[in-house]
Image 1 (cartoon, rainbow, N blue to C red):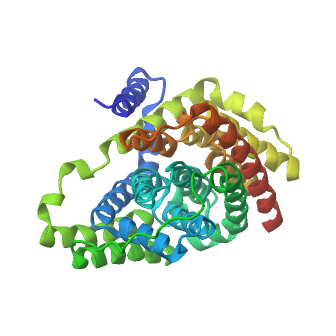
Image 2 (cartoon, rainbow, N blue to C red):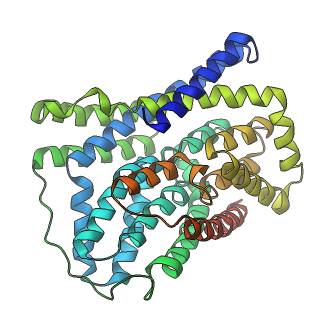
Image 3 (tube, one colour):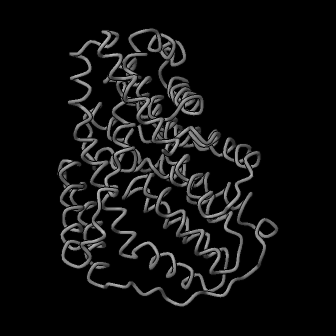
Length: 389
């Protein structure tokens, strides 16, 4: 079994054990499961959509076209890759960027004859810091939008400026430490030939599925339904054109079990002291100090444990009416979990994909540079949130 499989199963067993022993009352557990069922439907559907989109060649085509559009300029390629990774994260969530875009970017770097480090770092940083704009961009966003009753459009309006601030800080860090001259091993590159999808009908169906997902969510369709419809369209296309691709392994059982177990475990810990500790960290100050403290608490807890339990722990002690501090906490748990590999599932999955592709990640440099981006990005995004009001 993969180590992440063991983690997922272990969390599920701990959660079930807490319910069986009475540490977590069954009524509370039932309410939690009822709350997360639409989220699990969304996660399962969007991962299937993303996996089939990758098989259809959409990511390969787009990445190659970006390299061609850059015309040998690393500065242009940098801007285009930032936009590509950001849009993938925003529309298809951060785990899609980490799992599916990382190998595409590494393969692209090798085709261009340049070091894979800059493109790989672009995916992992933006998988986290570009995950603020839409509810679908991150599971924590779905929870926050539901908690303070924001529609997708209203949520995006509140988080647009914080998202711009977080991406701006990320871009500065990427260019300074990974992309500028002296940090890469070449000054120009030779653009590759265009990538041709093997099946144009499947390619078009996958693109249509992605557009349907985004349009449905922005139109106010329930997220699980929108994701299921979009994935269903692409699944039908593959059932007609490439049935052998449709296999049980497409379903992200590890992620679904992990999330379910994590919710139950964090809720149990909250009843037995965690809520009190987080309440002390958050304090009761409002205004700028309160928002910065909430963002800092989210980032700190995310790097100590993981961003999802960090958000859940903070949400449990913040009142639903305190929308500003709740969104500041969300910023901390989205932008902040960069300093250590376990801070977010996306970062863990990114490390796994880098190892599978034979790319060595210098851990010391990763931690040092990522910590700076995490701190500055969180502060900038929280201050931008306060400007929006």
